[in-house]
Amino acid sequence: MPARIFLWISAGYLLVLGIGSLIANPSFAAGDEASAGHLFGLVETNGWHGLAGVFLGLASLFFAMSQRWAREGAALIGLFSLASGIVLLLYGDGAVALWLVPADATDAVLLHVLPGVVGVICAAATPGGGLTPRRQSS
Image (cartoon, rainbow, N blue to C red; front, side, top):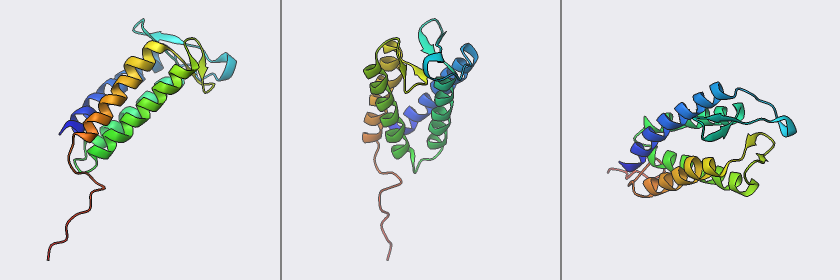
């Protein structure tokens, strides 16, 4: 089931990146005082970004454990990741998106847009799901 595979993988990398972000830059400053630290020397991050990664990773884990809701979960996680990546790209490198999260094009494309597209594709490739009506037996 492609949706569950996507969710297990996204749960793993989101939790690693989220916890790593909280360690690399635990700052929860907002507005002009929001700062960016570098995770793995590549991704600009701060406490808000790390917290979002942890919450999204936990949501991915929750949906991954449910065969019934995996398709909807992959679509939801994928769409959220895609939307957040687009927002980061619209702000541009070096800006602070939504007064909280440092915008970084590398992060936006590799860790938001690309996984978002994969999540939506995996959801579409998975048959059925929690919102599909069940047949009544007579």
